Image (cartoon, rainbow over all chains, first blue to last red):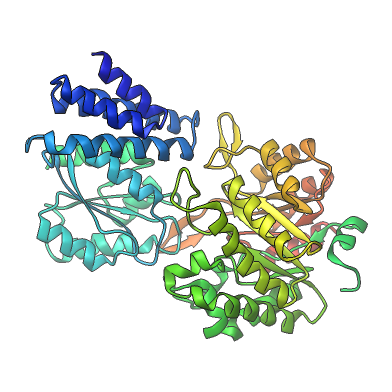
Amino acid sequence: MEVLAKIAAELQRGEDESVRSLTQAALDQSVEADRILNEGLIAGMQVVGDRFHVHEIFLPEVLLAARAMNAGLEILKPHLGRTSVGASGTVVIGTVQGDLHDIGKNLVGIMLGAAGFEVIDLGRDVSPEQFVDAARERGADVIGMSALLTTTMPAMKRVVALLKEQDLDASVRTVIGGAPVTQEYAREIGADGYGFDAAHAVDCVRSLVGQA
Amino acid sequence: MNQPFLDRVANGPVVIADGGLGGILIERGVRPGGCPEALVLSQPDLLREVAADYLAAGAEVVQTNTFGGSPLKLAAYGLDDRTEEINSRAVELVREVVRGRAYVCGSCGPCGRVLEPYGDIAPDEVRAGFRRQIGALVEAGVDVLCIETMIDLAEAKLAIRAARDVSADIPVMATMTFDATPRGFYTIMGNDVPAAAAGLAGAGADVVGSNCGNGIEKMVAIAREFRQQTTEPLVIQPNAGVPKMVDGRAVYSESPEFMAQHAAELLELGVDVIGGCCGTTPAHTAALKRALRI
């Protein structure tokens, strides 16, 4: 379908106005909202994520693409059935206590939303208690934590420990990410997954929810 | 210091600058999470102590604890209205310790926001923020500024221009942080070394280069690229490797000896100012000093 390919292409160019109007045009042509999401917006963002991963493009292009994706999602949301929004699961995300960096966390939130997850974004400087309380209250499947500083990474360990203390570690899985975070660190603190970039974090969440 | 900083750089030999600060503060009991710059108000003795250790190790440049001292960054802690107080107090602390035996260097890191059109902040606002911070640093008497750890050349240039708004002749060092990619060295925002070398100097920096990053060996390669691009004086301040978390603490793998050994290659490339960033300590400074025989 031509309009879907155009949405994906304009999203890759970071053209939020075009993505917005093309998404509306696709709806007007009675293209199903799910197809617009998957074959237009997500398909485009997937290419952006892949090209970022191999350093063909850099953060500015990703940020513009993410903004374009959000523009399309705004139009699309009222048309996505209950089966789409939150159908994949619920994820609580945030930047850990003491850490105020949120570019990466925001990207992950957008990508998770696009992948059909209900995303509860607790923002920056989120305490371990806030993560766990929100996950319990909202019945979340996964907690996603971000840190940019080596000094704030230990807060991730406290979240994992707190889930265990409250016997929630079987129902709520944890995924961590951020520049200084490694697979090794995830293993060390007992986190269930590690996302080395936003797209990979989404794959990781998807596979954890699939297992649950 | 008898001669102005830039004369000292021009006349040689290589200038040894100090190393990291954050990691040392944590080692000495500072709990992570608060505003690091507010320590100039709450724990001045600790900062004096670290400055004294770097001076004793032979650092000829000692930095202020003002990396996040832009009001845009301080605002995250509700401290933006104390920008002038924090920055000028930070300078006083270092000055009291070094008493003319080292250059007092005003540190200035990124403002923590992404510039339009990719992010939500206008260039003028970023420049005005840096102008407030740098105005306070210069007013309090720094000998040189170091605009550092920049990942967006546009933001680095705004900071340099803010420094030039404040003073036409304050010496300015400006450094960016690059990742090693299969296609070469790039910042996360996509700036390469040629763009940085030209852009930083073009905006008015006197000394250009790189800091932070992935250890001394990659820094030697980055320095080589800078040297191919520019005849400007160069400053290189590497991390002590990539941090690993051990028992909840960041551990850096590169020893003082390892760094000092490779620093000789920086000297051969004609790097003018050599110091350290995250994970480096007064022991690294002392090793550099010994290895470079100055």
